[in-house]
Length: 276
Image (cartoon, rainbow, N blue to C red; front, side):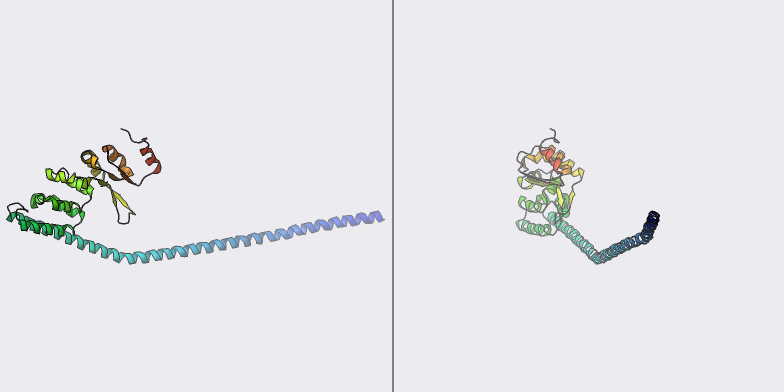
């Protein structure tokens, strides 16, 4: 009897243990679905909140940009109007100067310097006009020799006029204009020691490059004539090879390069890219 009783108890214990494990597994299974659903809900909620914040920030940035553009638009319009007014004034000033000088030339038998008093007045008037003109109009003023006879001016005043231009502008516009005196002046050290082939903004944040036709003319016709005077070159990486190969520069002591790549620059100065 005792043995049979113990066997019955063992069987009952095992049956209860099996039921308990089954119940635990069922309980855990019943918790998994709502737990996963809850976690998924939390993740979705955080994602939606993040998306909403990003959208709000994007909307705020767009609103700020719109307001900034609205604030800039009148300024741009005003600046455009001011530039138009300045251009009109300079055009009128240049036209008036040309007419005045033409009248003086006509009265003085084609010369601006035959009369000392008239020569002094011409110098003063020319300097006053030059200070108010931009580079493009100053070049037009200098190149108007057939109508006004500006090349009749003394070398002194021509130098003052030319000093208001960049050396590259002077050489490109005035060299080889079939005037020996002007060629001699332009090829002097004062206009050939430094050549800057990079157009920069006032802050140097942006640069603009000369077009290929200008670079080609310098390499073909100008640099071979003045190369011995050049002491300082300012170049960009795109035109550097053509300019450096256009001539020897025996007196070159300074060199400035824009938009350069370190490897390409190293190859240039180690002779890997330059072929003679």
